[in-house]
Amino acid sequence: MKIALIGPAYPYRGGIALHTNLLYQEFSKDHSIDIINFKRLYPDLLFPGKTQYEESSNFDHIPSYRLLDSINPLSWLQAERYILKYNYDLIIIQFWQPFFAVLLGTLGRRLKNKNPELRIITLCHNITSHEGSPVDKLLTKFLFNYVDGFLVQSRSVIQDLFNIVDKAEFKYNPHPIYNVFGEPISQKTARKKLGLDLKGPLILYFGYIRTYKGLKYLIQAFPRIHDKIEATLLIVGEFYDDKNKYLKLIEKTGFKEQIKIDDRFVPDELVNLYFSAADLLVLPYISATQSGITQIALSYNLPCVVTDVGGLPEVVKEGKTGFIVEPENPEAIAQAVNHFFINADKKEFANNIQQEKEKYSWKNMKNSLLNLYNKIN
Image (tube, rainbow, N blue to C red; front, side):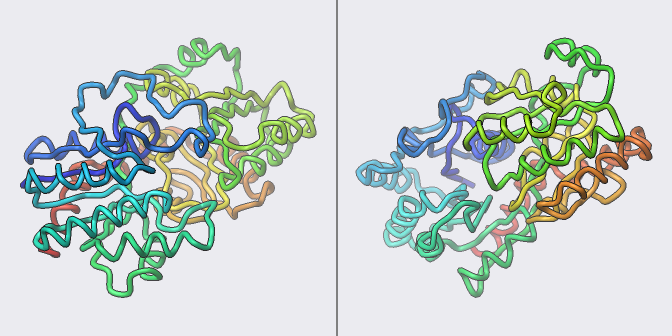
């Protein structure tokens, strides 16, 4: 089968680009697949981070055709001509942000008009935006009008899908594991390489800092945690929110020395250091669909505390691989963290995670997409 995979890929950074890279690698084992990449993803004015580009060269061997400019319709026509020229059987679209719906919907409509036999599947990371506007649903509906099938990666997204498409053909497949960041190393070595002179437990927050990710509730929980255990909290990620308000929160806790910040986007080659150094990952999100961060933690057998939002509870088995707590509740976060460090058998948790993660393979994702294609074809 000939497949075109539309989405950001190397040299772009971030979870969606990584997803594209790994999905390409899996499909290329037994299918012909091309990546239709962006030559401009976000205009600089709309991008809150320091750079959109990957510092690592892990995926520089993956070929892609950088045709799409998110705000230049002439590039959409160029991509259309390319796709029609090579007569693909299936188009898979990575969708995570309504900002791209006009581009993708226009491209889908034109392709369908010129080749009605072409099948389009949207791989939905998000359907409703975390920090969206009232127009988002209209934009998303415009794209979905030209889509034949939908793959969702968390069950919580299914209702979001039916709120836009009444009779959608869809398949659920959980987000695969991100297992490309290197093997775990000893905790002592990892902490030394990170310059962390610690003997006690290390709690990790990892990923972009944005309001919907609820970091403030973890910071507010820390004094309650430290009442029971002499832990350190390590916050790792680039701030897409006002950093000063978090620094003020940390100051207010009275534990400034025990709450450390590593304000950057972590290169692929260093990710294993953080997950090897930590004892527990905490994701205190206010809203979510799924999280690639939990899938990194799974690959390192690292237990998680997550909030009961979106698809996060789907990848944590309560009391076996982690804990699920009420969102926006510092007390609940503190109780779960303290319970883990005081009462849990950490080796048993690691063994449970090892067994659980077998189902989160890229081969399963590929097969789900192919099964959906056969259903809509």
